[in-house]
Length: 341
Ligand code: NAP
Ligand code: F7E
Image (tube, rainbow, N blue to C red):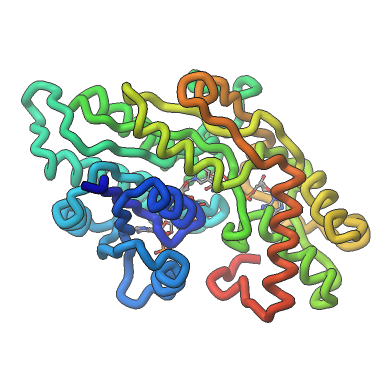
């Protein structure tokens, strides 16, 4: 019988790549989707016709229990979150509820449905759980590169909520013997990235300028440095973590970092343009507390999981710019679900 996976955050970037990967691996894939008439669900269904949808919301404990009871998954991937860092200052409480407490609700749904009791011995249960932890937990970094033992100093309500979910996942592993792991993933991008994140904002900006639809691109802090990889590579790591013999947490990244300035330079160059003619910096796009740099040490994942990234920074930037040039030339509307500047 096919193994069954339940993915929260199925309408997001990672949800779509992970679903494709698991379908290729022969899984029966279920996506948890929220809302009564969520337009992202119908778009997801067009892209991923073989994914089955179960209704549920990370804010609603009962809905998660019902989803786990209905799907009877072998593996649960908790990718659902409010994931845009600036939004976490504007809606800090909601971010805590979805991105932080949502992890507790999902773990409780699994614990209850697996019959793992509070007082009894650490029996574990059969359902394997993946939590989408983030390099934003490192925040103001204490060492570079960052590995599984590096301490956390989150710099946003988002980073704080992710740290709660991370420690809780560890705690359920230690308290109940559950196979519950966190992937501490560094920034990963693709043509399916939300238009509010900087890589996609840049690739769309370049495409608009190239096609004569805009004449400038407004950005915030050009000096911030990130370790950017390709989302398609990173979802393979999520799956590998749940196939391991023992439940452990892993850092996933490329081990190379670039600045936002270098990102802009590479993206404009990919379209034959000089970035300095078009990029305008805007103080309003700076964050109340910035994460200056993030750079992964993915050695543990390479050695223990055999995981390696396959797409370089330059290849990633080129593929995003090419994709957005095609999308806009064909009259596509990438901003339909993004109201961020
Ligand atoms: P994304 O594109 O922003 O997707 C977020 C998903 O969460 C969407 O499907 C959204 O569904 C869902 N969601 C929001 N609120 C929800 C709620 N109350 N209940 C259930 N689902 C809800 O994020 P992503 O880039 O794919 O990232 C996936 C996960 O990895 C997130 O947890 C993110 O924080 C984490 N992460 C991402 C990166 C990265 O670089 N991409 C790095 C480290 C960690 P709707 O369509 O209903 O809004
Ligand atoms: O910003 C700077 C900004 O919004 C990257 C999420 O997936 O990865 C992501 O979080 C950097 C920051 O991603 C603009 O200040 C400059 O330093 O693309 P971003 P993020 O905040 O790193 C982590 C790992 C996650 O877990 C998150 O869910 O770029 N920057 N100018 C800008 N950023 C944006 N968005 N827009 C600008 O105009």
